[in-house]
Image (tube, rainbow, N blue to C red; front, side, top):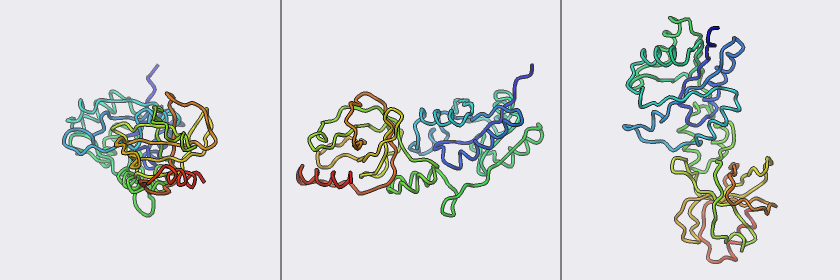
Length: 285
């Protein structure tokens, strides 16, 4: 029995934004023709190897794989360092044909591949035609008149424009991180929080206070999140502190997902705990 052919989605997929998901959905749609939908992930990302300025991730690897699993596509990972010097034709022959057994390909309009990105979607289409492989290049998915990109989303997050970032992602920006012990000052202020530390590779949104939501036991609960270094307490550690409204359970050591919904205010240094407590009450409201 012949091995089933794959419909392969090609791209960086560094943020899984709406442009990326359009490419993946095109590959997934090929399942109706008997192809197995698949996403090729390069690790490390080409933008993060020597010679490039590393980009902060918009999503952790575990979250990316979770979302791809929910989309119902197979994930194939390849060590980019082993293939980065392949000419476009060799990449197509060794990876697309031999390793992935592709019967269909989906990519974005600006897809590049092969050594130094020498190959483009036009070349890829011609290679597919010669091998009888179905080919689809997605048009740009736009937001506010411009193509959605991970660069635009990073900029929005760094400027506190969380609604814009979420619109381009097609979901709320968030992170699933372990809850660590803090100094318990929030409890003294009738505003207990869960503390989460950002991994080095993940982008940290603009410092300040956000309306948010946190998933506890399968339910999404309203919350308020402060991101930053807490200037009132001379703490230089970047962290996320989330107060989950009307929840008093013990979450230490658990892994909790927090999603940011809107930016409310910047970080402030308060002159007293009473002043801080009053502001926290306003934030909750």
